[in-house]
Length: 200
Image: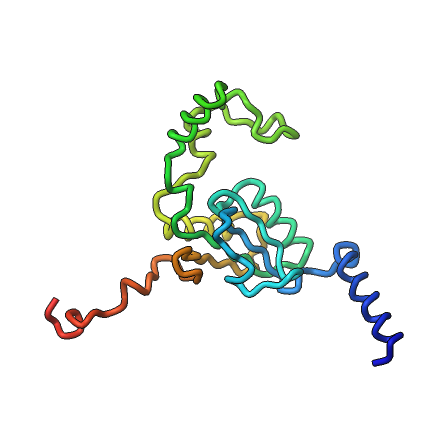
């Protein structure tokens, strides 16, 4: 390849990168990833992703919220995304306290009644005045396996997500840096000598 050809190729690649939305270029993997904001979750490494491969959405817990639905609906309906992967993780902070405890702590810390605030400042009509609803809004949970399966089902059953989109959920083990399926912990399936010989 000549120098001019190399320059032209570089210019074309840069143009495709910068203008990919205008040109209707989807992500390289046609993938949307929902995962936790936790800094220990190296999602790019875990999924083998490079820049441009996926739309990645992070929030506390890697949970389906109204904004996740908004983003997933856009990427699947208009950006040719065909797969959604939900990745939660072990030792998640959203398992440490209940919604009730978080509401109480925030109200004490900030000195405000959470039922009086706007959840989205640009949409004042979007509000939760029921204290129980506010507690649920924080979306705390007890089982990482159950919550992962639940998020996949929420996306699969939402009318704004096309039915031909493939959706799967995995758990990132912060202790190993590896992914596993919900309810499939290899450490529980590994036989010990006693179990193998029937002397347990």
